[in-house]
Length: 307
Image (tube, rainbow, N blue to C red):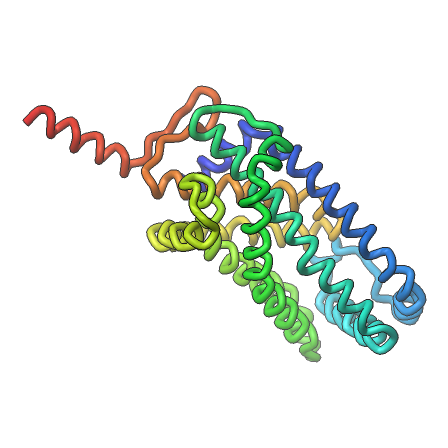
């Protein structure tokens, strides 16, 4: 039910999804600007490697028999370009990695925290708060939260990147044809889900209880422990759909799917936290839900007065 309540919350808060989408576009624009020196420096290396191969194709070929070999060749191309760039200018490569894996996630995590804060106002009292109003109001907490969550997730990103290339480099035509794409999808789904599950209650705990980032992580972990299997299964479902759509529709679909999935995950985080804490909350303008835990407490109180 928590997942379906998150979908309902998504349907009644499309303006928040749109605001997060616009925020993502701004962050991606900043990231591209920061990466311009990298593009200019390594443009010749990238173009020469692309011209020397016929790997450039559409991800819509996922159902074709040669998709696995194409994916293998693409990963090899990326790896070769990376090594050539490292040999040409190591310092600039390190700068590009910092932008991609630290600065960009840091800025995006701020937007997710702000979205959770806006959802808290809506779910608790059906109040509507502007994105930038919430951004400036929570800036002291969101900056610290985003910093530690980015560093926390960095290990998952590094492990995911390493395993994607390890599996992608398996040089066996049978494996590439029938199992490579499937293994890559399963790997991405599992690792992204594990990362998400361990941080599901983090931002909601900080926002709802007004505690520090470290105390929020401890309280949020207790929420995950209470609903671990439900949270794990829903995370697997969301990321499975996300990566399947990406593999089929192509990388250009990420421009739309990433902000939508990010907003849905924020809503699932808040819904899971409210449900675990037994807190009543709105899912739309006319429906307020009372989790079972709170109903049991109310019944006990009523029985106490009767006795």
